[in-house]
Image (cartoon, rainbow, N blue to C red):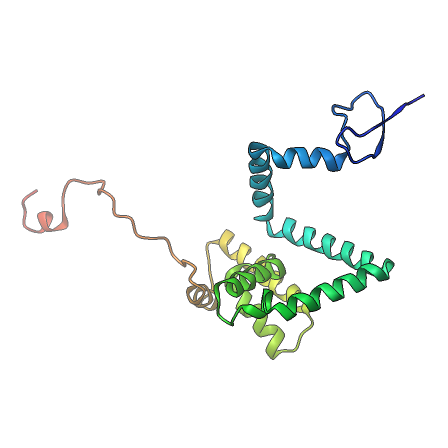
Length: 202
């Protein structure tokens, strides 16, 4: 029969014995010990930052966190009220989003982060086109995304065939994307010039 023991981290939680257990700590106390170790904390921070550079991973994590918060609020009226009062108290201090003026660095960073979260699937040079489709044509987001994905597929096919349409070249140039490769001079394969041939020097 599997025995139990009390967590040695001081939290009082009762844990079950099993063969692969490496510590006498619960998960929360173990995380606290790791967080107090500067080397381990730095390693964990670097890993998290690296993972969050991936727009797909970041978007998935944000959706999961949002769903968890919404579920917690829906099932716990006390938590919902606590969050409401906390938000009002923060707004009253004039800190947070209220303190950031339009065009400030934090708002610019937040805007870029939001764009990468929402439009991480869309190449940068097609994002203006996506917004244009939504604004002028009044398409739903699903239909607009489908149209952009068709354009992305057409770009891939054009690159494979070695051809890029003029309209696509203009769009890329406006978006700051290189259309042609940068010229790199190299030594000619021959040792004579056309001028030398014309003057009879060869």
